[in-house]
Length: 273
Image (cartoon, rainbow, N blue to C red; front, side):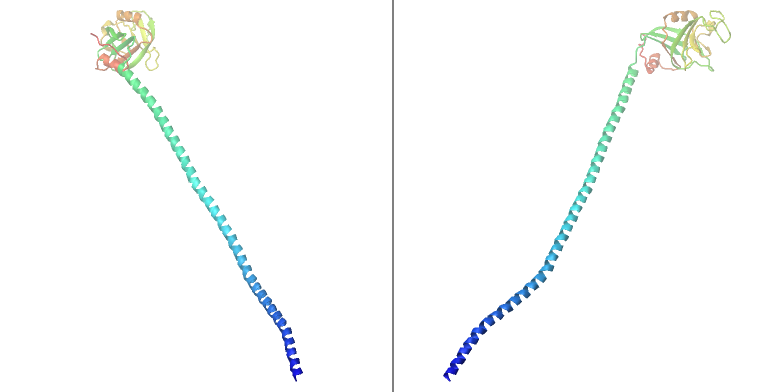
């Protein structure tokens, strides 16, 4: 009996010795299986998460690239107006410069005109000057701005008036023929007398209008000519010898004083004392 009890006790001890390692082994296996399953679930969860993270990073890169492009575009858009504004400013500066140049160009003629006006007001003293007053039928001869002599003359009829203006003496001819009636020069019948001082009136070059002598002394002081200025023969002889070709002749019908008429034409004369 006792041996049987002893045998059973030994047998139980042996079973415990065998069962405990098996239990530990099973526990280890169960733990490994559970860890593997958990690792698998974590991997399965982590993989999409990682992929999603990568996708987010790619999208962020795209967003960053778009943001860079947008900034570059904004810079270009900002630069273009600035460049255009600079071009406009340059054009404005050029325009202002051109306006200043134009003003300078305008100022120069204006200054010249003022100088010319001043000269006209002041007048130039001529070496010689003739003034024919149709109002008075007088001819005034000035030398160096001073009245040298006054002559009675005949001027044009109402239908053939002597032209008003300023004309130069362009020729001096002795014994000029009267071509209209084929009267030789120096002939007592010649209405031109024996001295001719031609005036360049409107391009006629001294062939049509002149200061000349006469063959009818009674006509002097009257309006009897075809436009020329007639003088007594002795008077024109005196003047012919002294007058220079190129001397200006003012013909006027003004009531103003002779000095005023001359000054208006740019000639300064000294009033007779």
